[in-house]
Picture 1 (cartoon, rainbow, N blue to C red):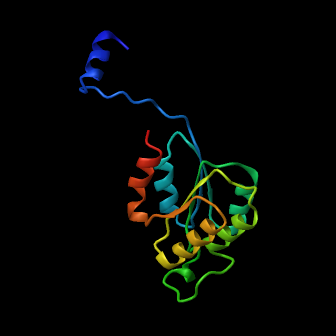
Picture 2 (cartoon, rainbow, N blue to C red):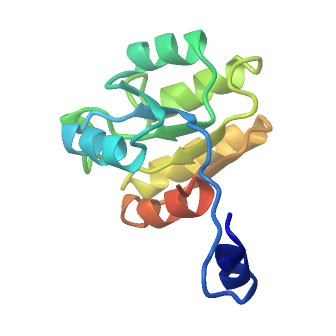
Picture 3 (cartoon, rainbow, N blue to C red):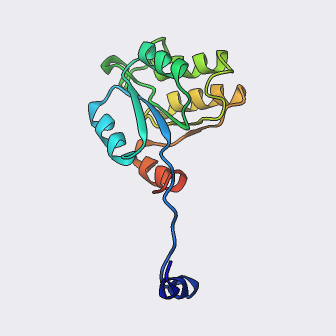
Length: 151
């Protein structure tokens, strides 16, 4: 940094930001539009995407992630359904992570579904198992990502 740049930084006219290292991110979601949205948000990071529970279990068993994003409703019949959780929803992954405490211990888990009831059940399950988990409605997710993992 030059003397001039240093002086501008001390006066608060120029901000100094360090570039962060790439992080490893996992996404469970069945919506291709959200796949593209996450790909844009985490450009330069390592992003693995699963469409269903079986794929998610494979990814989560094979690698460690800094951030895990989980959707609840993974099939069209789950959208606006009265049924709660089954083995084909993100809730199954939440339960699976709880029953495998050695996996993804240090990961930040964010549930981003529009299904608030399903999200709260997932977060409760994860927190009861000692996991760091939070529900962020999808429309608010961009701001949360920016706050946690800004570039």
